[in-house]
Image 1 (cartoon, one colour):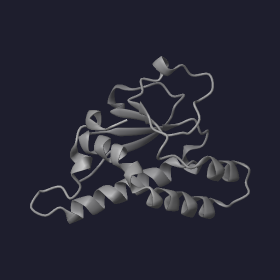
Image 2: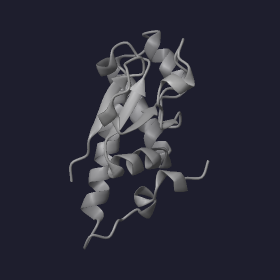
Image 3: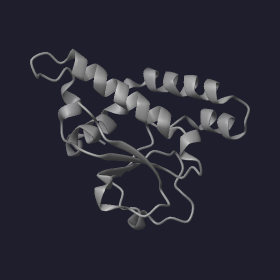
Length: 144
C-alpha cells in the first residue's frame, strides 16, 4: 500500500490537500502563532533529542552520524512512530519543520523510518489483519 507523507516548512501556507499537519520539532518555530499553522498536532517525541540536534547544528557530527544516531533514538523508543503511522494510514500526512533546508533536516529520515515501519507492518499482516492494532486506531484514541 502506498502512503503519502509530505515534507513542508512550517512557514509555508497550509494547503487544502495537506491532510494531517504535524509539527515534528522540539522547539516552537519563531514568530509563529499556534492558530496560524492549522496544526493537527505538535509531536515532539519523534524529533531528534536536544543533544543530537545541537551536535548536528553546531557541525560537531557528520550527516551520516546524525542519521545513524537519530535512527537509534527512534529504535530505542519504537512507540514514538505510532501516532505518525496512524495519521499516514488515514490519508495524507504532512510533516512540518522550521528547518530552512528540509532535505538536510531530520524530516527525510523520519519519513523513511515511518514508511519502513508501515511497510513492515503491512508485510506481517496476514489475511488483512493488522499486526499492530494501535496503528489502525483513531489518533483521537491516543492517550496524552
